[in-house]
Image (cartoon, rainbow, N blue to C red):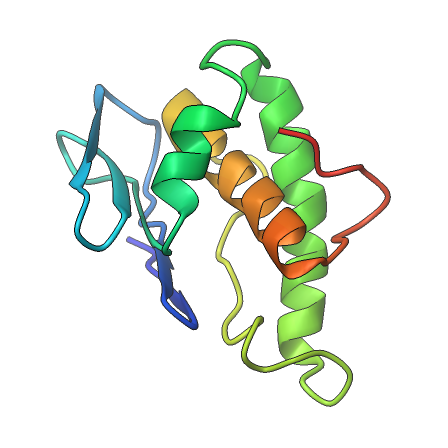
Length: 141
């Protein structure tokens, strides 16, 4: 199993992967610290985001589930994660506070719709909130 913990100021994103996603359960119950968690029953993949404002942004601004197809989300995620990781490796040019660690998101792994949806929306939120641009795609929700 692969794992990564990414901490950005108050963000933690963890993706744990093996094979394909099974049934995925969303838990958005942590109103105190604004936590969004997506996990499947067998814990093959898990995304946890702790970032003040993200949960309310997700509920109020993000497009509803199934607005975008999974292949669209995957292509955006691959592009944005590639740029994120490039910045995380280049701490002299980019803020270490924003890009503390790389994201282990790999092509060819089926993370499932919910994981891709949540990662996509976090990356949109991150770009808008921090006035960053992770590539040529406009970060629209």
